[in-house]
Image 1 (cartoon, helix red, strand yellow):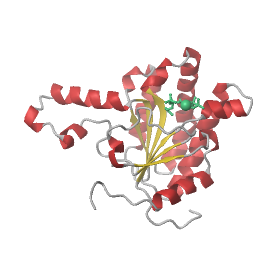
Image 2 (tube, helix red, strand yellow):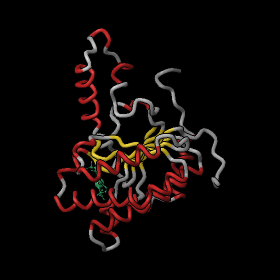
Image 3 (cartoon, rainbow, N blue to C red):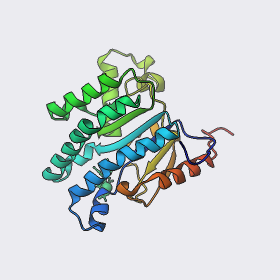
Length: 234
Ligand code: IPE
Ligand code: IPE
Ligand code: MG
């Protein structure tokens, strides 16, 4: 049950889950412990948003630029993602959550790719929240690939417009995020949802991702509820 009555809730919330490494440092732990703590927090965060009946939740877990991190950290992040699917899938499915992956699936190791595809397939008829995991996701790659596929499909110059291009993005059926939250205090998108963020409300919090809890989520939802959106109109 939600604790607060909030009118004007967003339909789609997207989160840049940042601050794992600083969290680990603050706790005197190695970096990878920060990533595990961050992964553990995903379950709680999903529960809170499900309580508030948020229709779409997107979590940015790994960017196209994150491949440039040290090999051992990249390996660790892939392992975290793999174990998360293994440990959480059953529960998510039981709760009626529909899972989606956003990003360049073919660069993932084959076993991980199979898990992601299996999770998507298993949950595709669920009617609860749509939970999208952006892993190996970059906004520029998404748009560039959309243009390439559009041309490969023979779409002619006259037929290229905002609506037809959008159809070639990773998840055209998902509405643009109403609210984008970034934890960890930095005020930037880091290549996230460049197309979809056109009219999103942005919310930045100093809370580090592993410590982003119910109270922090409620603060973000309350802040969103008071925003006036214009979409360029008056
Ligand atoms: C976010 O944590 C997780 C990923 C980007 C994969 P970071 O590792 O970026 O943590 P900070 O921002 O350095 O604290
Ligand atoms: C953004 O965090 C990407 C994710 C949270 C997955 P980063 O830590 O990679 O972003 P920068 O490098 O600080 O911009
Ligand atoms: Mg970071």
